[in-house]
Image 1: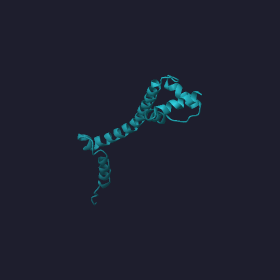
Image 2: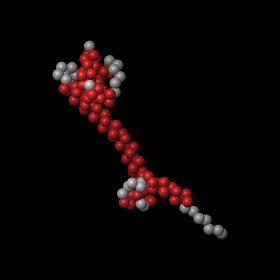
Image 3: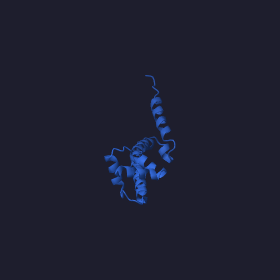
Image 4: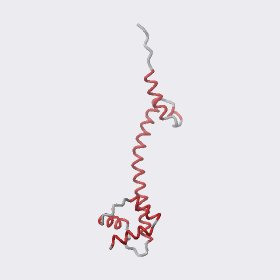
Length: 119
């Protein structure tokens, strides 16, 4: 019976995983078992942290809008939630990111919109 040489496909699979983990430190980039474990862990972390990043940015936008509203001397809106509720009610379809950017770049513009909503 002739000898069957194998390992080409397995080696190809392992090198593909190694390329993914080549920047990891120590055994996490060298040993096959830990490489596969670290690849799974990295992909899980990436998926989870994408949601965390979205959550963090939304919080940042809310803080910025709140700060701009707090600077207003007339105090039409003392809270962020009141402003956005009235914007939604008046069908001003602006998302949090755009409202925060308007507040930073042109604070008066945001206050003009707030005045327009009241009247």
